[in-house]
Length: 161
Image (tube, rainbow, N blue to C red):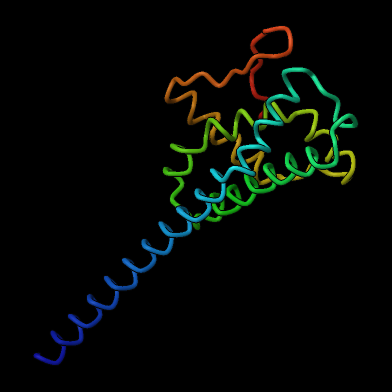
């Protein structure tokens, strides 16, 4: 009887250590991707995307440096989306911190995304678009405005299907 109790206690301790380690790993991964997404180069790429929508600037008129910065910013958001969809990071935390930036990037980046889709011959960054759907539902549930202003001041809703 004592051997069963000791074995059971060992299983409980092992399971507890495993679950705590998994939680800590997911938290640390989320903190790392969050640090990357708030880095100056990532913010710069997203700002260029917003400016591209406000002016409006055709993709073909972007400098090579601006094109790369925007592409990099969207690709980084797609990595976040992959982690989110595969549940590598806490989904609630992703939505709380990144739902609005993701939606605004998708909205501002519609021309850029269409350009990249045409280049690839298929929709690029499908994970980001799936995260966009969840982010839109989250924003609507939380009653948060997800509109941005177009070049003439009109309010534009995200093109997330």
